[in-house]
Image 1 (tube, rainbow, N blue to C red):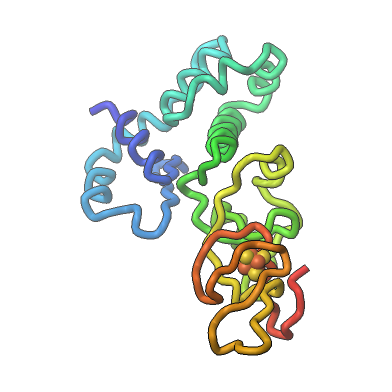
Image 2: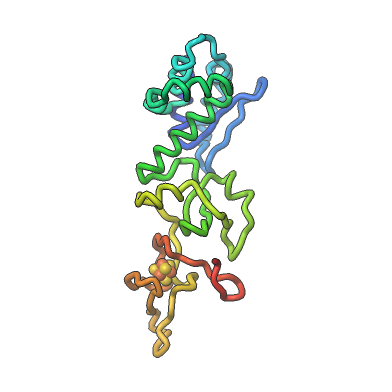
Length: 222
Ligand code: SF4
């Protein structure tokens, strides 16, 4: 069996598959590996190892990059856009660097299209962008403040600065320092937003880039 279609299917499901020695290494969002998929991976392990191990064999780095992009199910346009200096740089850092470059370029293109890369399943709080989605590997190493992994910058910063669309994790106004409950009748469940957004019920979940999580002390996250 040609394992390339299965590798493509895994990648499109947000599943990263790599080889270390004789072992397949898989990183997947929770629930992405179904019993049926697990069985297919096991049944095709030999073919997957062979496909993923294919060495760079030509002296034409651009051709190697195009072949690698095909195996990773990454848009070949990322390779076509490289000038000769860029190709030479990637040739110098080897196949691991080429793989990282192609995956990073693919993630960046997905973000620029206003979509979340499939494996970016963790919500963090960026001090510039507010709540955003990133890869769990990023969230895992961040300090947690007011219940949110907190970052001084994120992969969405350049997109936000350029005026692009940033998809948001869903939050509530009641957990935001900018929500001011109605002082006369707070039990009515209404209030106002200090950022001037239209009214949401305090517990209504929605996306908001101006959300500022309340700390346990009741102060601003910033
Ligand atoms: S900034 Fe966003 S989350 Fe905060 S109160 Fe306003 S609308 Fe709600």
